[in-house]
Image (cartoon, rainbow, N blue to C red; front, side):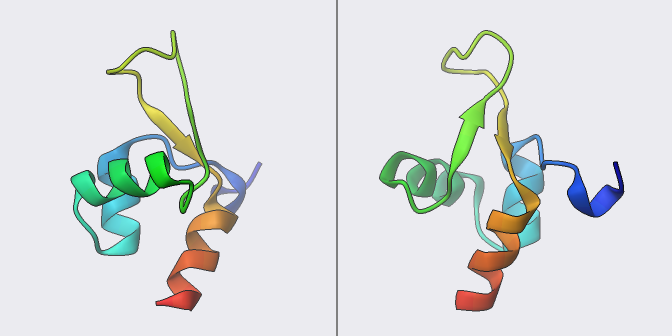
Length: 62
């Protein structure tokens, strides 16, 4: 699996990739703008996982 195929695993990394705040990442995942899944136990503090292609698609829209 190449680096470009690996999912982005934390909201901090996602925010950095998109140039937005971590709070915006949370809002976008709650609204369905950014398709993300929770890893680990899936609890409130579990890290997110986002497909890199979804991030690239959002970058093109901006």
